[in-house]
Length: 618
Image (cartoon, rainbow, N blue to C red; front, side, top):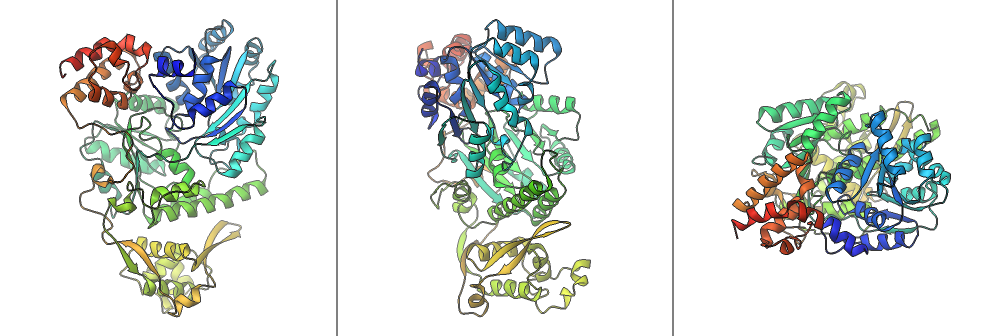
């Protein structure tokens, strides 16, 4: 078989997605690879296809127990011999996998990095021909990545202990230039072919909403979506509990996930979500990394994450099958305060010295400022994200809340508001951050304001009629146009940012210049269901067909087959394949094989059942 035959036979696709074929060709030619490809763009295909074509067994290193299980289940359904080794296996199960490896029963073995140094595992690997080592979530090797894991630093030791060095592939969804350099160096990649395929996910809609009441906005967004899968991310365990309870009270099948639950409850709740027993997962960022559920229709962030990397990775769990999906962030100024507290009170990494800890904390504050600017941006949200990762992008994607999908935009002269803000910052001595400045401008009454005597300033309360979110937008605009800058101040209690005027500020403050920016006339529309937020621009991804009797019948059949096979419904066929069946309405097995996502093994296993249903609607 060649790469095209493997792609069609096992995975049911006629062509590769952008970048996949190039990566596969280099790995098959024996060259190491560093691949940065966004969540949902098909990274796993880049190592699964060559693994099936190479002699021997491929080792896939992943920190994600849930991902290993999901991918192995999906591979087995497609007819691929695979297994995983991690802490979820009992002693007998672990030995059985090792025996299967020694007998040459598998083409792919997924292994947690901590398991690579186990003597029994090393002993079996030493007796086999290891064709490839693929390192998934490779950013975990870097201290500058958002999810550093010291166990990743030992991967080169495992590779060096093998009888001969296999080709090595490193894969990640998000990586800055500094993280890419770390991946190549720390994993000891040999003259790697490096490729960044682009971070854009055209099928995803991005939206930011500043609601008065987050819970009511959440309920409004998901109204009528009880049969669709979604994830709601919250910053704190307490918020997870409150939101989950409110959704259940409203009649939604919701469950929860956070580090305060027992390992058994987390496992059961995750399985309930994956198997569609619960349609909504409410969780902290402890959930989801590596979840391979392809039919997540929306990801709503109830609170702002600490950085763009985490946000894009979490939001990217929507629409992995290419279908239209929605990524909505509900923002309030309190989110910024919560994120700062999480940075200041996070558990120190025992693997790092104090100097390294301080550098990473400083980087965390920089990332947080970028995240906050995203939430108050008046420019295209998609282009903001893409520029953050070093890509050029159009300024009007047509598929985000800034590009005309939500509210009405107008050019607004904010010179007077800017003068009030700049004047207040000067009178406060340019020693404080945006939170306190906004409180003074709005005339807040609290101990800190009275302590410094800010309630006596001439600028105290001069923007009493403005929302704090609007003042934050004005501040972001001032920074974007070079009239303000944020300077980090380091103290014994942590690092915090203070607002400083720039050389340009004087001209605006004294009225010699004006500042005009794009602002929303109406921050939110009354109609707030997810569909109403979607833009009508050029980016859309796979088009979902309208609800129909055939679509409903195919979903019912898929659910029934999944229950019998004890696998998630999307493992039988993803939504994108079901949509294609509705479009093509195949009448024969050969026509069924033309459906995107239908491979030969699944066609043989499930084809007749689906054809019988489709026949009723042809």
